[in-house]
Structures are given as C-alpha cells and as structure tokens.
Length: 344
Image 1 (cartoon, rainbow, N blue to C red):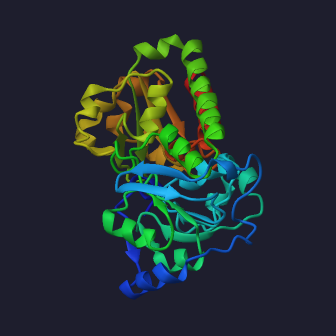
Image 2: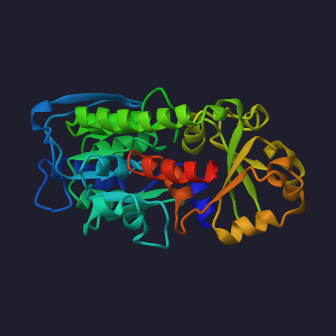
C-alpha cells in the first residue's frame, strides 16, 4: 500500500487484547511510575490546575493530578503534546514500515530530541495493542483525533483516565484548535494551548490579509498515487480546512461527493470536477509524474494555466504529511511551505 493510502485510510481502531488483561490492568495499575525520561517535560508545569474534567463523546473524564506518563492513540495527538513541551511515552505509527518517521518530520525533530516513544498501534491496520499500553503504565490516554468506539474506550479507561474525541465532531473530524486546547487542558496548560492556537490563527489571518484574491477562488486538495488514483478531500477534512483557513472557497461539486466522509475518490471519467481555480496535489514525485502524464488530467484548464501546486507526501519536503497531520506543530511549517508554492 502506498504512503498516500496509509494517510488516506484512517479506519476504525480495533484492539489486540484479551478480556482477562482488561480485568488485570483495572486492578493492577492503581499507581503509575513517572521515572521515564519520555514521560512529561519542561516548561510551565500545570500542577496547580487539577483536578480537571473534560467532556467527550463517551461522557466525561476527570484527571486528578498532572499526568506524567501519557499515551496517545489519536492520529496526531502526540504532536499536540509535543507543541506543549510534553513527550508521550507511547503513540501510534502513521507510516508503518518506517519506524523512525514519526520522530524525523522537520516539525517534530526538535521537540522529540532523542526520545523514542513506544509504538502502540499502526495505521491503516488501525489496531492498537492494549498490552503495550498497559505495560507503559500510563496515567492518561488521549484519543482526541481518532475513531475509537465505546468498547475500546471502556477498555482503555480500565488502564488510565482516557479522553476521547470532542462530542461535537465525527471520527477524524475534530479541528486542530479543539484538539490542541483539549490536550492542553488535560495536562494543565490551558494558557499555553490557547496561545498556540492564537498564534497559528494569526498566521492564517495574516495570509488572508496578504492574499485577498484567495477569497474569490475555489480550491481543492487531492491525494494521488502512481496508478494514478485520485482522492479529493472534504473541506471538513484537516487538509481541506487548511485551504479554508487561507481564504479559499470549497468546490460545491466536489463537496457533493463526500457523503459524510472526509474524502471521495474521483474517477478518471470525472476529472472535470477538479477543474477549479487552484488545485493542490499531494503525492511523491513518481505519483505526481503519473498524474501529469494522465491525458484527462492534462486537459483541465487548471493544469493548462499552471494553477496546480504539487507537494511531496513523505519525501522531503514533506508538505503533504504536514498538511495531513495539521497539528499545532506541523501547521506553521506546512502553511509557510504551501504559501510559497501558491504564490510563485
């Protein structure tokens, strides 16, 4: 499966565990160690902010004291913590087959430093190992940008206090602002989270002010592979939201294809739907070349008039991966890179 498919196919999380284990960890993990260097780090400690209660899709969770060992099972939740100066002890691997890739993106290299978190799950298999999570002895589990169901939430809650997605949004649909603020509240750093959001929102506002022409243009972001296959992302997807934050309008004909999903396939017979004012194509060089060679794609006005921006996925510069993550860490980097391409 291509890297594009790995990032596209965010499926439903399942668990690799046994009922017996759940019963065991429910009684065994009464107290949690905080000796590991990867646990929690640095600046403004939130010790005085507790207890805090957070509402989410499956009820509410109270966190009694500042977490020291956090496991993230949300798709990009670890980056929200890293932006707050906290290193989780466990996380999911978005790009299986490349064990270090989650620690080597340009926007996370500094925050991770030499820390190596335990990988507790993978995409697109979207399985998490409850055994691995339990072995890490977490005192908080975050599943903010995820699709965990009530059963898995109950399983995780038997290990440690668990915060699921925001109740107002569907699977993989919670805006980065809410993910950031929720993570910040969970670790007692609400002011830090609010500042992160305000700073990035200002970056978007500055971009809109500098480029008022974007407001009159429709834009679509798609992912491609070497087949080539075309997948358009919804304006409610993280990638689509970036275009909206820059001021672009969604394309109604493309939005009509979504049927409540965050993406929709575009057949080669309907490539005309991609004939918008600006088109952003996520794909590594071989995939981008396959798209350029597609006869139907070559006939689009957006292509003929050089209004297409091609960005790499997981090959440097990894703008596509940064847009997909759309975290408080990746967005400043991704936005500056994308703007440079859009305004050439």
